[in-house]
Length: 297
Image (tube, rainbow, N blue to C red; front, side):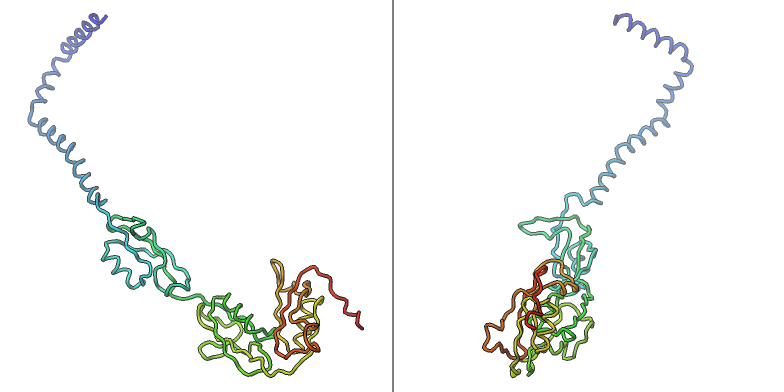
């Protein structure tokens, strides 16, 4: 089988030579010409030189084999970032800004990738980008709540409410019959309700001393609604601190909450008398039956 196949290939080859003999001679003549040899050499040079220089360029562009420890920008001021980045051969991009009470305004608080350390090796190529988050230059402003209006509060409650808003607090006492908050001050000036102050600033709580108040009769408000209890005790010039037990409490819920505990209680005091300005601590719960106010009439 192989013998006949070989003979067939030879016959076909001879027929091709016979049929195209006039064209084969010029073809072989062209293969030996200077034009073909020059083009062949140029093609071979292109075949080897183009990949070679391409790989060399990629090594240079990608800084192959070169890596830099990621600098630590945390705590650095924005003004210093450009120079700091130039010295460390990287590019820094500010991609976010946030409020923070723990870091000065305009400083870096986060970065990606993280800085290089012994416990966390972190490297980048030269001229690569490092993304940072900074503290906003303009701080966050909060509104001053009403602590001296219709529902005057004690210094303790004022301190809690102001600190929940992010303010720092200090106390200043003035002689008064009660220990209500008299006013709020910021940089030696009186603050108004709704005024906006930079978060983190110190607010002075000016409160009464609570000394020298005239004795008043303390009423038993257990079983009364929270709103009713607040009004009755307020008429006696007493400070009311109500703790509402429950979740998702709204301002309208005070009508549905009933006082279940009072401290001090009139029964524990001589002749049920207390000094005006005393803080009365109350606990209120929802769904508790309201005491019959007509029972003693």
